[in-house]
Length: 353
Image (tube, rainbow, N blue to C red; front, side):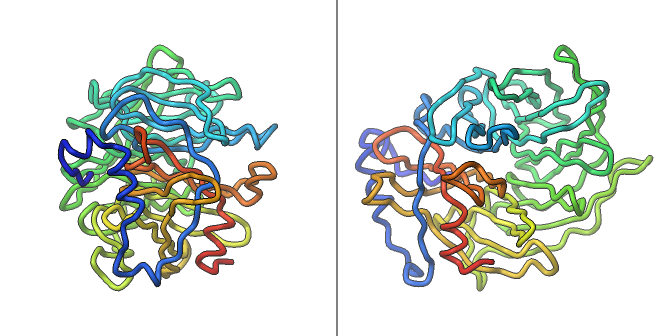
């Protein structure tokens, strides 16, 4: 969900974006800032278009990894870590994207991405490799307007979780895919009270984290059985308008996982900030930060972020401890894009391990 400022903002995109960069918040003194080291080229679609990123790791050359980013009016962009556009796939109105590498679906093995597609109420699948991405099939969603999504390896099953504005989370197990037909079955559903979007799965613990936009962030354990997917009662990790300062909408949900430390990160769209929690135990709150405009690089900040993606993988000399990628809803002087932040800067800003 976005805040809009009317036709005048659309006509004066540069000025409005600059105004967003200059916003001063009541908690400005207590919320540290970081700066993007790079940004992707803007999406071609105007208005509210860029939405959600995912990160594909090139195992043979990590510095040549890709960022996948949705244009929810047109398709999927494939970007280099410098922000250059490598490829664009006109696949429809894609909203959220996620991927898993080194997975098996039936007899097929490889790296697989999935994105919710509101053109035909489906999920579109893509293969990803060093050359880019290719459409690899699709399957129909069970409810109208599939919105957010995430992928997870639950036991031996590769599962696509679809979130809806009506509060449902549907779990679809992928059975086989061959580039022409995708076989899957819905194996579970859980219902929340209000609109959902972002989610992420911790494959190591079979835990699903979900953003309920105007309530907060939840977690539930999942288990695949002969009777379908079982959920434990959801636990509310953090609630909007509370002590931590997150506000509606809770949008992007992502994980940073390393041998040293692991964190849950969400985007708090209503006050242009990102909240960090310990991944283990009671998910203790570690702080919030913002992405600000840099006079040194000329890269503007990030506001009204929808989706985020994080990787802890060493991605070459520029990002030895990984990156955070955030959608920027008010890219200065241009259409929307994605900002790329060195995780070391987040760690330093919040005093993380």
